[in-house]
Length: 255
Image (cartoon, rainbow, N blue to C red; front, side):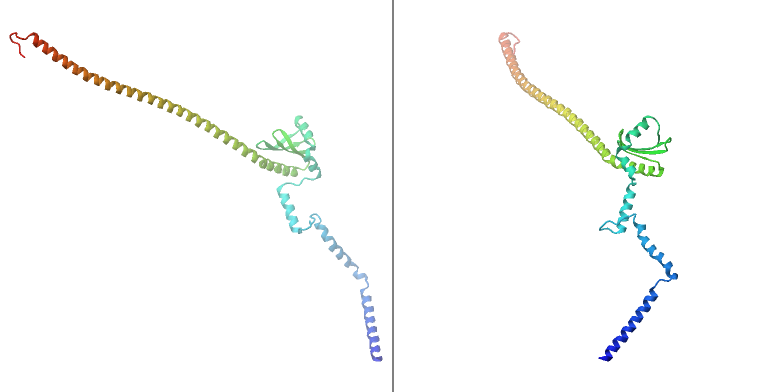
């Protein structure tokens, strides 16, 4: 038991000695001070990705792809532009147009929809408008020429999409009107043909009646002719007999 106690005491002393020497080496020295910025660099790395926050249930790559897809489909409006797009600049733009203070750079028409890029040279403002017929729908004012071009292209693309249904409706209305007109013409033609057919049938009945009447008259005349010829022959025979009787006994009379 004494040996075991002695061994434990020796081992404990060795461990204490080793631990004490390790704490001594762990103390910072002046040479080790520059190592601290490396820790700062590691902490600063996530800050570079904070512009694309990760949505719960999505990976950063998927979120970035979604943002890129939205950016490709239409330009992202800033806070002021988004507020303007709700109708904050319509009245001002109308006043500028009436005052002939704007220069028209571009205008696109698709059906009753249109997009215009206008420039106010006095204030160096670009105006981008989306409208239907003569009514402004969305109006954006910006001093950035590049953004103005991007927003104008997006509005022009929207006019193409919005007008597709309108154009299709106009085409279908024209096709229906044309078909209705063709139906009316066909019905009118059919009515004329029906009238002609009715006249032809009526005339055919008249002709058939006349033909029957003529045939009956011809038959009657034929019978009358035969009877008259027979009567004529009887009359001629009677005349001969009377003539013979009258001249009977006279010289040269033949029977």
